[in-house]
Image 1 (cartoon, rainbow, N blue to C red):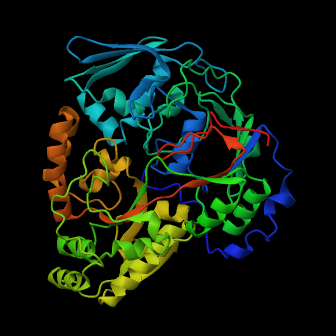
Image 2 (tube, rainbow, N blue to C red; image 1 turned 135 degrees about the vertical axis):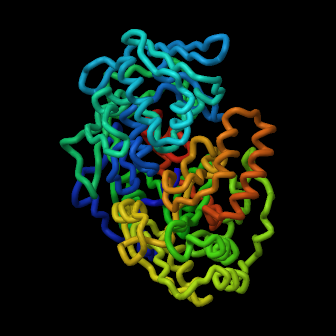
Image 3 (cartoon, rainbow, N blue to C red; image 1 turned 60 degrees about the vertical axis):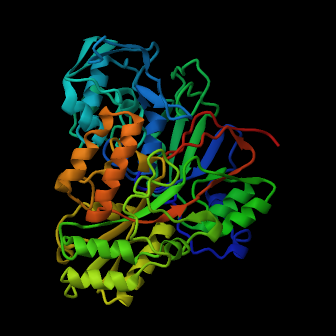
Length: 532
């Protein structure tokens, strides 16, 4: 969720020179063979998919771990590690039996005790998991392959929550790993999934290697979204970290790599004209948004947050990176074109923004020239460009805005700090998530407003949270009504400011087939390389 797959490659591209620049890969590696896929993804530096919401970590997690259930292409939960399951007549007791053939990469068998510990760990940090734990009377094993979740009251979303791939993800871990608090990273990288992480070949900042798990037993059903058989058709996937877009694109054209997860938008026309390359449209577009530190000045005052809502010129922000035909404005807190998109309380939106209104609201907030620190991503061009534009826009209305350059690692550390900017704190950061994630207030941590116990920025609205707590227990029609009420409140207390929606395809060589396109992750299974 919150960090897009576009958070991968540093641009600054002179497009015409891309083909002529020698590839770093050519000097370092032999050409890829038919059973190895090289993919340029982000700079992976967190390996625990229950520890963070980073999309890169979700991709890593789904490669080496497995889940009890998985979402199909229609976002419906289907059994994955579970072979059989049932629910009591009163809908309060769920019984799950693991399918045959499940084993950890260290050779030991997957047990029900592992699953119980994993669910409990996930329940510490994921909003959906927290909901499960708040309703759970007991979660316990019956035997080595069977466990139960006993609820105080029915929870019809249980299977869907167990299938969600939005981080923190409910992957199954070994009991001894899952017993570690979710606030501490698991570093063992031993799962039961279709790929093994090759620790010996790991080169942080350069590349990571994943080997086919020869002992993995895929389900018999056909692959469908993230569900069905996770059939691995290659021997090795190498996750390349290439921060220079020129080098990455030249390597793609020469066939030294097979896939780039985030091509620069100004490359799209070149990609379309290359007979060996193809753009792969996403299953869900990316929603960019900013978070403000609601605990510190000036954004501890709701008027200052409302000022930001009025200030933003979405089209101008998005044009800092995207061609016009790849952007859309967005006014619904629940995303464009989702079941819960609505127009409640959207009178603040004005084409071009409303700088004078924003200036007036800052004045009403008592703004007195306090420094506003905007985190500027140095390794994510889209967010970095938007941060520069936003800081310049703030200065135009008299706000003392200052950019603070950070890479992904520094951003992750700094955005967790709740203190003032004088103590290395922050005022604003920019991130993104799929529009699919924008419609899930139960499973998506960015849609919460539970104050200091919530996601970065820490907005608080008890009234909003009371409505969000009802979501899991009502039908679709009632959720639509809830969504309108929640949006009414959201655009009053302003926990998030939307910046716009972008269409961000991936690019691959046409010889790479079978790619699964799914929001918020890049599955490694099912793909294969075919001969020309």
